[in-house]
Length: 257
Image (cartoon, rainbow, N blue to C red; front, side, top):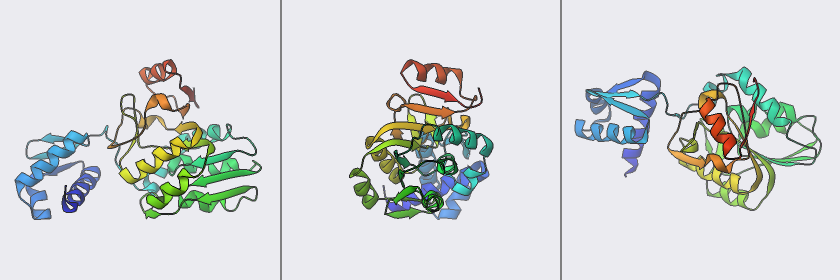
């Protein structure tokens, strides 16, 4: 697949996310390509789950987890995210080594770490590292690499190499979608690569996900559901998800139950 094709399809995804639907003829003019090419793009996006094709175009699939800017995600369900974050911080002990993934819910954990002593925290999130840097009792480590402006996160070969040389007690893992079959997923492949290494170097994986994430899935797998230790969420988790996760040994913690 050429880079032009990849970029065009990413642009079509952004248009779908913001407008809710697209038309073949309009996209053909916008990108100066044939209608056949646009139909192939829409067929591809439908196969990936983010679009539902319709006559003359396509509609957004609202069950797909799109890549949205952190500022947008941070303002959605913030009260619930804070409660999830507060519960997550209860699993941190003085002297722990932590990995904190980028994301709107993981960022809310930071204020609740202030009372802890002698923590070592590594993160791939610029905003999280900045806030942690003011805490006297926390040794902050930040991964190097390229910056994803949408999420204020770092990714790439340098980050992956640096991360693989360490081991941590706990990983607080975010994600854009949580599906029983697909597991925890995210739209960005580079960030997914880094997240998978995070999982491999952590003794305990705690996923933090508000109820809107369930039943959604995206392009890139981070972790299968049976390979996480805990998930902290709210009461909107579907009962089928709750029962299944309990049955496979995942500790499900519902903050507003």
